[in-house]
Length: 172
Image (cartoon, rainbow, N blue to C red; front, side):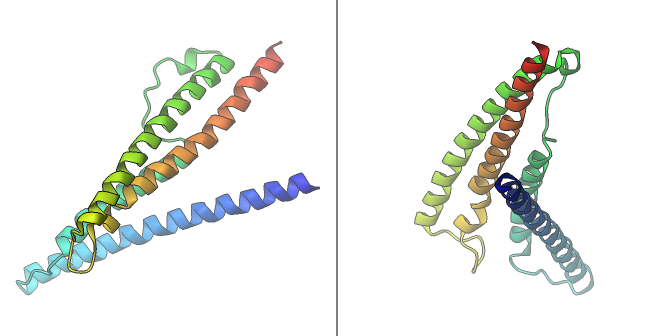
């Protein structure tokens, strides 16, 4: 059964990617808690300020927010306005979802493209966040996250296309 082996391979790859996303998100969130807690302890008890921690925490907030958006897109749980979809028939609802998925993919690709251009310009400028972290590396999450979200919505698009065509086929 070659089709079954392909499905198993694809399923394993997707589960592996989900595991990497979750592990990265949890690790960055844990790092944020540790850094913020350490900074608070050093400020209040020792009257010391750890240099660069505040800038690093700001960047970690950006990374966690965008990785959270990637995780939300995985389950198709992104922010949406859902006023009428429950009232629509199943095939019309699927067709509307196809249009929304196409729009989402287009917007995410556009943002990813411009974010990649922005990161490239920061790399050329050579600016640094801290003494050891270049600005372009810190901002690399922007094109990566929006590309991943676009890819996820391509998968949702395929699923919704299938639903739209299957509903049409069963409706005839």
